[in-house]
Image: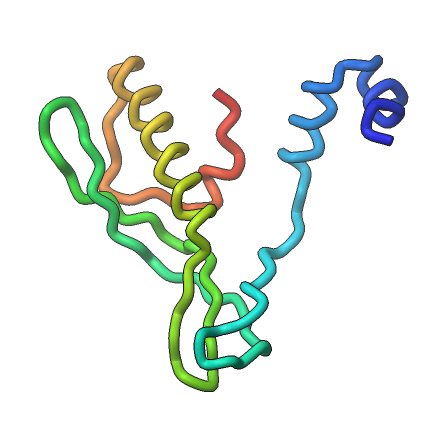
Length: 120
């Protein structure tokens, strides 16, 4: 199915098709299926997270604004997805390296949404 759609919309260029789909994806994140307390009715909240990033030889604090997390109204826990956390770490490292190579300023805060539209 994906190959057919890539042929139809992007002259068969699968990478371009996937990139277009990813950049135009406007779905909302889905919460984790269940909390440790057993509640299965979680919902998404957006929180600001502080991350330590390495810039050159120094560690700096960067605030990532609006990170989606699952929240349990029953016990009050805010839960994160380990796969998402690992991918955020990788994307942040790549973004900082890209900015350093272009001698751009490393901001003290970034919007999570801006990481979803990075194309470099």
